[in-house]
Image 1 (cartoon, rainbow, N blue to C red):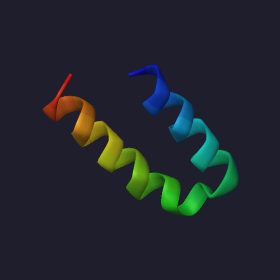
Image 2 (cartoon, rainbow, N blue to C red):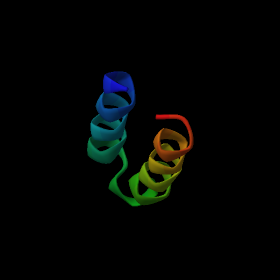
Image 3 (cartoon, one colour):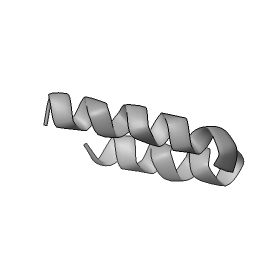
Image 4 (cartoon, rainbow, N blue to C red):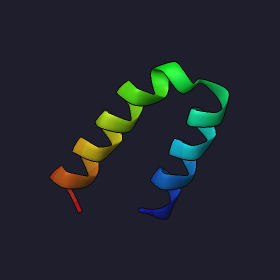
Length: 34
């Protein structure tokens, strides 16, 4: 699950706007399959 977090940070730094949507998607994925 560490990989997802790393991607989150990268996308947040590169694109702060879409990061919100991407973060929500990643969160849902982690919640679906922990």
